[in-house]
Amino acid sequence: MREKGVDGLLAETVAARVDPGRVDAGFILWMLDEAKRMNREFTARFLDTMARLDLGARVREIKAPTLVVVAGADTVCGQDGYEKLRAIPNHEGVVYEGEPHNVTNGVPDRCATDLRRFLAGRERRLYQLVDIDSPICHRDAFRKP
Image 1: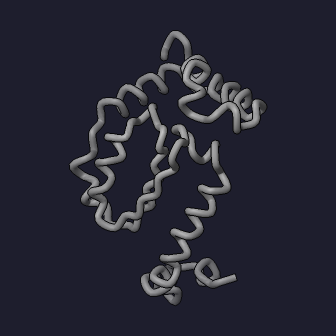
Image 2: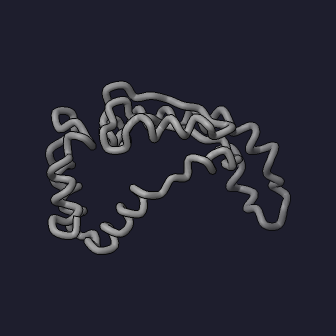
């Protein structure tokens, strides 16, 4: 990582992240250009930490409703990493069969649709949990358009 940079790593592994046959070539070039701007030393330390960090035993502590999106063809994280997320108490899982790691880049409309559906199913509960008359809440933030 330190030698080749994030852009070098991404260039070598782009097909593991997005399907080059379905994603605009201009997007891939943009992604690589943006990666060049990342600090190599910081990114190397961050990725090393993420590779060693195992929070699997703590996911049971997550209290918020959670949407777990699994890229069915993810070779970056691997399916075993997603298996640990099944222990989140109030989670909903959706698998994007055949999709590589960066699902939000590869199938953004599907991601947005699934997220809207997930959030809409919890909207009523949010209104029940939030006291919109509280002085710390901005009342209009919780009003339906």
